[in-house]
Every structure is written in structure tokens, then in C-alpha cells.
Image (tube, rainbow, N blue to C red; front, side, top):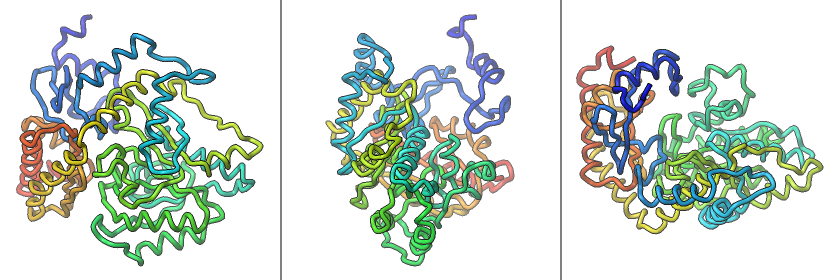
Length: 441
């Protein structure tokens, strides 16, 4: 069978027989669309329809698709080697990338552990924190404190960090280690610290400090938990409280890293440095799966001083040369351009073109930060019912819960961004007008 000659319908039919897609029931994946190619900000389907990508393939393709610089980085590395194990060996792309990450991340983060996905990067961070306290002869510190409406991954330990009652992994709540959850921040990005709200976090930390290994949160932007933006003052207060009680702080920057919020890393909004930072998604420009967990001297020295001073973790594809090579090229490309101005321009256009939706019936809130635009509806959205309408408009969006959002590639033109915002507003208007059961569940 020559799959290159199959029609879109034939490919999708075979797909449904064998493939289990993300967040779906096997055999009933809903609407799926076969992709033939992608370039710039456009995804070309097998039936030759083109879609402007409004979410950068889940935040990762900040430079768009099929970028000549990133393509060349992969091709050049491929001529040398595609992969080599990382135990007892090293290579230039990994060494270069580690040094680069240390140079650009917040001060003090100077140790880099590579892995192959964001969820694993968080698992590594949790493992670092646990081993730090084991080495300090305080093994009872084995719980994590986080905030509600957060999301940190789909693997077993990371699921335990997601809101156990309203989070996407609440089904498994009884099977997971139970962590400590404080109320989510309720002060917006441009607001000061809500002392009453923060006091819930502070009291929970104080009561349970002897059992907490680390505080972990998504800095400034809570992603899959509801696309909430919160005050940098809250993050700064968390850092100060962790310092007061000598606890570790883990920043999950997998979604927010590499310029998405208007700062290279979201922690910069609060001018803080965590003890451990997780990176992924845009790290490799959306080319090859890659993640990294960085830590400071406090963490590495603490682990090294223990009897069990070997960090027992080592993914097979750790520091894959192809992935490291394209990550180096992606970061160099980002830093060589005036990315701040581009993200600021995207932010201004998103505000101008999305804020009018705030007055539409059924819209709860409209918010923008950096290259992130969010429309929050009052009711949950049936994504599968909306997908055909989204495709008809020539755009690619992926609503979830009651959220429709944009995280476009940084290279997007003003004209293409306007097509995205116009399409999003039209979709919201149609939902607001019909309010039918075919759209709302």
C-alpha cells in the first residue's frame, strides 16, 4: 500500500483503526484532519485546504513551520550523528545548549538536566526536590504545595499536581499521591497582591512546611487549567515565603518560556529566580521533542552531600543531538531578532481586536498578555461541534473547556493575525447568538 497516494478520507479511516489520539476515546476521535505539509504560519491539509495556525502547535512553533534556519540545523547535525547515548558520552550540541540556557535563564540556575518531554522535565524537578530532602535527612518532606487550576503534565506524578477536583486529571484523584493545594491567585496581571487570597497559600505553607519538599507553580500564566494570568506580586510573595521557610521553588516554564508572555521567561515579570526551572515546548522551536530541568547550587549541592548522591534518572533519548542542534538554532534565531517588539506588537493587536468581544453575551472575560489572547466563555464549549466551523474559516484553533485562545507563532503578519482574531470573534458571536445545545455542553 502506497500511503502517499491515499486520499485524506482513506488516511483518516486507517488512522481511526489504529491510532489513539490525545484526550479522546479510542475509535471515536471526533473530527480529525490529515496534514500534508506546513510552512510559515500555515498548515496544509491533504485535501489542499490551508489553515492559519493560531496556537503554534500547542505553543511550540514560535518560528512557524519549515523554517530554513531550523531545517538546516537538523540537516547539518544529521550528517554527523542523529543520536548517541548520553551516559558516559557527551557532544557539542548538548554542551552548547546547556551553556546557552544557563546564560539566558534567571540568575543562579546553572545545572541542566535534559529529558524528552515537558511532563518528564517536571518529574525530574520533583525527583530533584525529593532527593534534596532525602540527602538532608528529612525524608518526610515528600509532598508538594501548588495552586488550584494548575497543570503540570500527564504522567503519574505530574497528574498529582493538577487540581484534584476541577483539573483535567481529577478522575485519578484517589489513585495519586495527595498534594497540598492553595487557592488560585485571584488578582490579575496588572493588579497588586490580594493579601486575603495570598494568606490561604501562606497559611497552608506554614501549617505543612515540615512535610513539603517544594512549591511548584506555573509562573504568571496558568495554561491548561484555564489560561489565567495572575499578578507578578503573587509570584514574588511566593518566592519570599519559600526563602523564609527555606523551601524549594519550582517554576514550570514549559508553556511560558522563550518570550511568550513578553519576557524571555515569565519569572522575569516578578524579578525572581526559582531553585528549579522546567523548560520544553518552544525550546526546540517545535521541531523535535526536548525538555530541560535547570537547578541552582543549593539543589545540586544538597543532593551531592547525601549518601545517595547519584541522581538516578536517565532517559534513553536524553540530550538527543538533533534536538539539541535545532534548539540551539531556535534560541539563536529568537535572540538575533527583535522578538520583544514583535511580541509587543502581537499583544497590542490582540488587545485591539479581541477586547470588543467582552461585550458579547455569554463572554465571561477577555484577556491578553504577550502573544497570548484568551476569550473565556461562561459555559463550556463543545470543541468537536466547533471544529468544522473553525476549519471553514481557514484557521486552526483548539478550544478547551470554556476557553478559546490564541498563541500564534511570533512570525505571524498583522494581516494573518487579523484573520485569526476576526475568525475567533465570529465564532464567539455565533456561540453567543445560537446558545444551542449543539454548541454548549
